[in-house]
Image 1 (cartoon, rainbow, N blue to C red):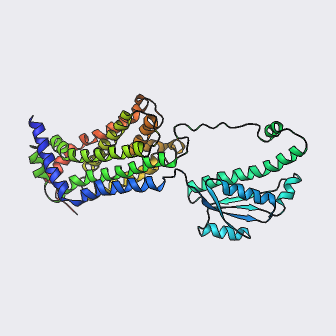
Image 2 (spheres, rainbow, N blue to C red):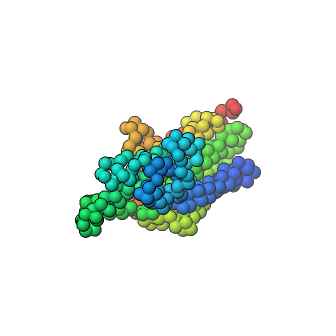
Image 3 (cartoon, rainbow, N blue to C red):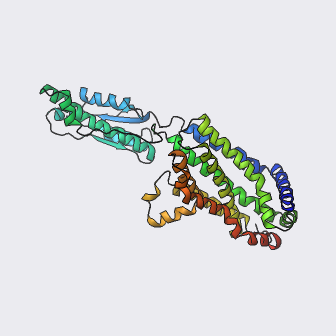
Length: 389
């Protein structure tokens, strides 16, 4: 009972600090809520639509105009301009007026009808990976449709049936089934990782900041006195109010995603709750460990910032970790966001049992227990260190 009473006393002291210092309100409530709303509303349509595309049509025939109409009918593409030359269209890409353009040289229709295999070129800007990839897919499809349309008309004139024509033009038909996210909704798998990474960043920083402020203002001995000199009690009491706030925020966000926005999930509600608990406690544990590793407000927060920023690249959501070099794949195990993403992908997104993600769950539990390695160093810092700006 004494330990529980001491934890409660330290927690009450921490609540007073949270109420007085506006940094906590801004970084624990205001900024995370803004990030949630910003990213989920930014991609609310799921896929980018009507991205500007240009056309250089030097053939100007019914065939070329039909290709342009088909390109404009695609969901991702919108033909916004016609250019007299490739140089003009290239300049428009460089000035960010369009993302791609289709080049149809003169004589394309005649060459198609006489089976001389004309060249239709398309150019796209990969400065933005998402827009470049989607438009490349549309432009490639249009190029294939052009030759197929002429071939279909020619075979029909020769007396082939529709079945024979399709067997020749499309000998293999692809039956595509996209599991878990059949709409290819980018919002469903990007927002869940991007916003989580941002919230982990704030959790890292606030965890290190709250101990660093005790050292900066010389309140370390007072903090330990409230815990009767027990460092475990001091840590538990100090981070209990923060954990409650973070968990509330995380569960509100998860309800917003899966309840209000209806993001697809094949797992159980308890999988989502477990994921939120692991996220919060692993992040707080890493922030405490960062300060214990280097008991300096400035250095510990720098480590937390660096680790959180690198997490976005090594999580595996933007670029698969299995495609990275071997040393980078090994390094990815040191980032909590990577394990969060894997647990989310295995249990929530694909609906597999939790046991399938046991290795990543164990890794997040290890991050949660990291403060045990530096408790004595933190206690020594509170009792003997002098703050150096």
